[in-house]
Amino acid sequence: MVESLTTILGSQSSENNTQKAIKLLTKEYTDRLGLDSLLEASILLEDVSKASAFLSLNGKLRDMWLEKSAGIKLDNLGCDIE
Image (cartoon, rainbow, N blue to C red; front, side, top):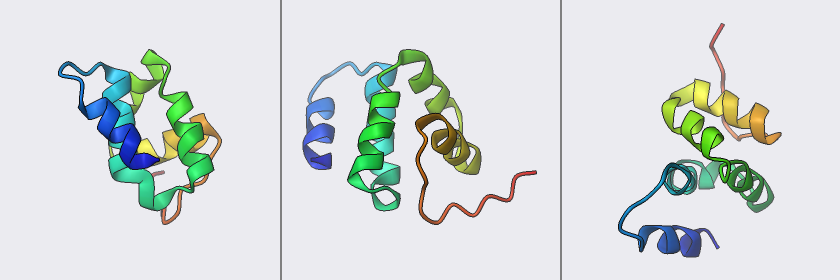
């Protein structure tokens, strides 16, 4: 499922932020999310403004934003941000 989503998105020459965000999600988070959570996060990123926010964040801050916004729990989060 993850491979087919990435393949479909990768086949288009010009990617929008939603496509970029879902590609990043599948690349960086597949090992840290179950399929249900991955689907929930993908649905969240269909919203252009949320996809843009996801792309603008990095590291632990992006992890925290994704958990809160999608209502999911990442494996191996280890948040140290105060």
